[in-house]
Length: 304
Image (tube, rainbow, N blue to C red; front, side, top):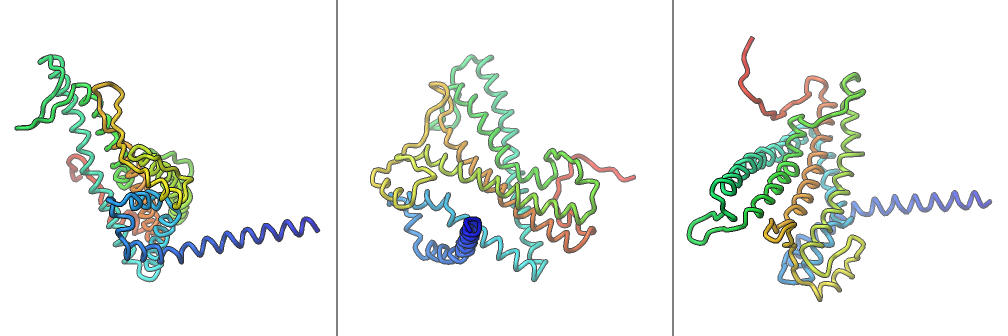
C-alpha cells in the first residue's frame, strides 16, 4: 500500500512538472507582450527598479522559455517550409562568420601592440605610452601590457562560433566518421540539444550574475527573487570594477565578464543553427551536406 502511495505521489510530481513546463511556453507570449508594451519597466535605467528588473529577467526562467518558444516556432515553421529553415541557418551562420572574421583582427592588434610595448620599453625607455591628439590617451606600460589579455579574450569568446562553422575545432572522433550519414546527423542533433545548448545556458546563468555583481551594489544573486531585487534597488548604485592586478595595470576587467556572456550567447545561437542545419541535411539527404556553408579558403588553390 505504501509503495502504491509513493508511486502515485511520484506520478503527481511528474505531472505537475510537465504542466509547469508546458505553461511556461504559454506564459512566454504574455511575457514578450508585456516587455514590448512596457519597455520603461526594464530599459529606463534612470529608474533603479528598472535596472534590477533587467538584471533579474536577464538570468530568469522567463527569458529562457521566451527563447525556447522562439526556437520552437521557427522549427515548426521549418517543418512546413524547409526553405525557411535554410534561410535561418544561413542568417545565423552569417552572423557567426561576420563576428568571428571581424574580431579575429584582435589577434593582429595584440601582436602589433606587443611590438610597440617592447620598442617603447627597451629602446625609448619610456614608462608610459601616449596615444592621440589634443587630449591624448596616456597609460602606464603595464596597463597596455595587461590589456593584451583582452584581445586574447576577444578572439576566444567571439570567434568560437566562427571556428565551429569553419570546422576548426578539435574533435575526438571514435565512431562519428564510421557511421552512416543519417546517423551522423542524428548524433549532431542530439549533441546540440543535450550538450552544446545546455552548456551555453549554464555559462550564461553563472556569467550574467557574475557580471552584474561587478557592476552594481547591492550585489544581485541568482537566488534572489524579483521582489527581493526590487527591495535592494532602493540602495542601488553603480560600482564598476576598476581594480587591476598591479597599481598601474589594466583596470577594466569587467569587460571580461561581458565577453563571457557574449561567448555563452553566441554558442547557444550556433547550437540552434547547427541543429537546424543537421535537420535540414537529414531531410534532404547526403547531397545537401555542407549546403550554403560559407567556409574560408586559405591560400591559393591550383587546378590539376
